[in-house]
Image 1 (cartoon, helix red, strand yellow):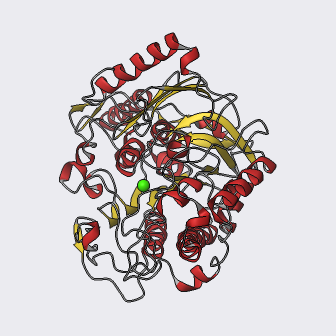
Image 2: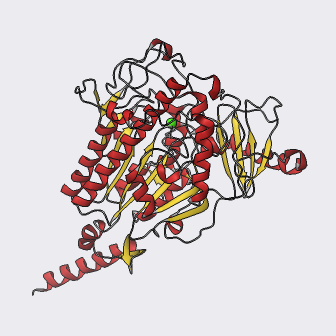
Image 3: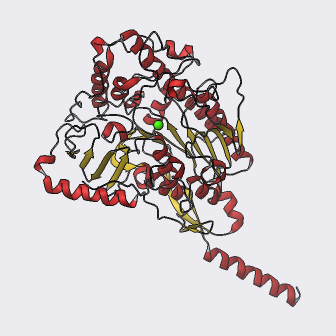
Length: 537
Ligand SMILES: [Ca+2]
């Protein structure tokens, strides 16, 4: 070997070693069935090790209540979700932001939403889960509803998702997404897309829930072709209104809700207590100011619309079954983490009203919702619904499934929040939350990693969590929760001790004026930081 070649080789070795010292790659790997972070060296190994990183599928449904699915006490036959729960972990205090846009923004960024305009929630000083997972070597896909804008700054295809298929808008017709909304819902034509293009034609047998799943299955195969791990955010539009479902799925539930919402709440609460989700000490929350009396309702119509809603969730479950089958066929059923949640509580809005002579729930040519009484009962045993910040608006069922790591059949009672997904998922992907992205200084992440919780261990939780939506406010510190309900006629904060009163029945604000003053001050400080222009009171 001549001198030049020797010098060249030793120089190359020095560079190789130096590069690995400067930038060791962190990889999540298995040791004795426990997932651990391991530093790796050597670029050739990195490609192989990237394949050992867990795949992650973050599934979210839209406007589904806390207790609709079987493994949370509901009547819907969700055998696949029940299987995930049986072999995984269920959370009892997992929070969202009570609303579609704000929840989606927090999940993607690990931050509380800034401002109130949904199209301004994604900014240049924020990085998305898609973007960070791309940097961790993942193939990323957004399959389903986006609802955060369609400019370059806030379009999924330009904000970190290698593939996008779905609804850029907030809701659409399930059988034909570009069928204009009825006049009583504003008459708009909704916007659907694939990557950077729009789609306006759909086949005659189209149903959004099936199509979004097809897209997620294709994303698994695409990642496999590229030999990359995958991060898929699968965001169903079901069971958000318009409530539309396949006749065969509706038939399964027709007649099952003739007992009415009060009976449904009681039986769900009983089942939750039997399965250990609700403590014996909890008391079912009291009636809702917007719910009406079952005895005076058109019971056949009410049973019909709740049956359609149940059928929509049933279809989601069937599709999760298809997804699990694909994971098994592609041998990814032991290296994939599945997370399942809802973006907000059951919904009390009622476009189209409840006149049975005008409304026919189910098919493509009608547009109707479940209304406030069912929307409230769907969150049993809690108070309120979507857009409100009592537990019924912000508590989501949350299932985490990864049999190799997550203790099977466990119930986790720690407090966690959707802002925690960012640090959790980035840690599992072997990355760190960046300080800068594309030349912009980023806001520091506000969530906390849940990796220890997923392993069945404890973590240091949040000292404070805050919420705001459309005049409703809440702050939780420890077990104390201060709530401002805009429908509350006395215009006062309410204070609850969730350790003994999770269903928010016993308002202790009058006994604790100093605590109320301190916590409400904290909330206004937070609101100011979040650019909410709300006068202190
Ligand atoms: Ca929603």
